[in-house]
Image (cartoon, rainbow, N blue to C red; front, side):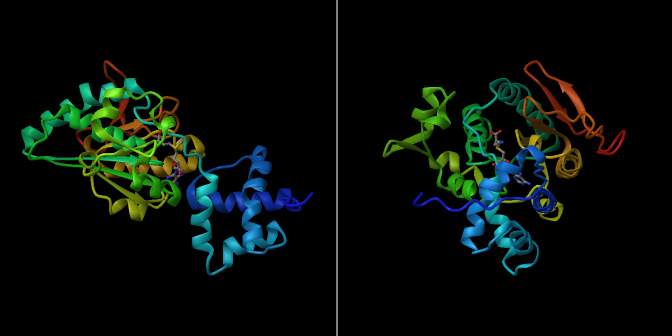
Length: 291
Ligand SMILES: C[S@@+](CC[C@H](N)C(=O)[O-])C[C@H]1O[C@@H](n2cnc3c(N)ncnc32)[C@H](O)[C@@H]1O
């Protein structure tokens, strides 16, 4: 048929080589059920670089001088970026009614007027902007230095997050009052207002890059929701270990509702709040087994 490119098959050996290379770059782990998915998604890259097979593509990823750029580019087609505003309402309730009030009290006592929150794997930005809207609604931070840092490995979603322009599906569970107060309609889409954006910075970051993470500085709360489900246990441990080091003593780690630290880390305390169960870095610093 016209316009249909010839299929280039991905052998089991090529699958394993490419899969392992992707895994060591970013922690995403594809099991053998995903052979077809990788074959389909990467086929266009072979065309783009005029390569005749996946073995050549593997060599390109491993040795070409543009290998780093290629690995970065394929993150846009291999990551799952599903997200929306006000996702997991019960956890957000725990955040505004329990976590933030308790952190604020602790900080007021110590004279610390900073609040730093990291949305790790923020996709197109709905999560960090949700956090900003919640904090603006809470108020009580006049004179504080409040910062929400959103990071992701995909440049495509980072660009979207920086643009801050959203369509209907991002608002599937959003109360109209938030749209009225924090967005401006623009050509059938909604742009997040400056007072929300001012609290948020968006950067590119690979969660497996512990050196880069060290430069983020200390955080009070880390949101990492629906990200480590795509990693294997070894990569999960590495990332959680970095989170432990990044959190201030008494800081909180918020995972997705289907995720837990079971078999990953014993370093955090599981706190039973009224609205949710969350992980906290012990106040006295490191206790118990390592992450
Ligand atoms: C399903 S989205 C979750 C978005 C948001 N946290 C939420 O729960 O709505 C997962 C995001 O994690 C990002 N991600 C996957 N592996 C990553 C890595 N190694 N470093 C940074 N981000 C990563 C993906 O690009 C994707 O945007």
